[in-house]
Length: 194
Image (cartoon, rainbow, N blue to C red):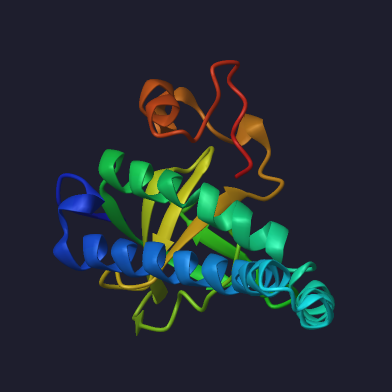
């Protein structure tokens, strides 16, 4: 049984606040990754070439492996807001897949459970339990993914389908027009992977 919570997820004040924290956190991460390049530029401009080279070398070793992921996360954080402004929260049963911390199985009906990949950074979603098992909040289309959160809308993470067979879903399971407007599916009918 799924419980719908409100008109759209964005109307839930803790969810909007959680998105603002997410946007701030990702901006700070990006700033921290780019700060050594700015420092090296200032050192070069000031004539401290040796110090600039040391800062750039240290920064390259520490940040280059993570910089693409942080830039990617910052660029596509807006899609989280778009999904939250288009879909309501639904309380669903979910469980983390033991073999991979970035996978979560969400049960939509008694017959249908979909596996999603948390992107870009996995978090622990299912902490609260009731008689049916661990619960989470989901906003989105079960065919194309969406956004999930711990109960209460505090921790947001983007969910992408992970090898869910396309034929397992019917048109009644979602609205393609709404999924397109929310950025979950492209105009050619394929889901987005960001």
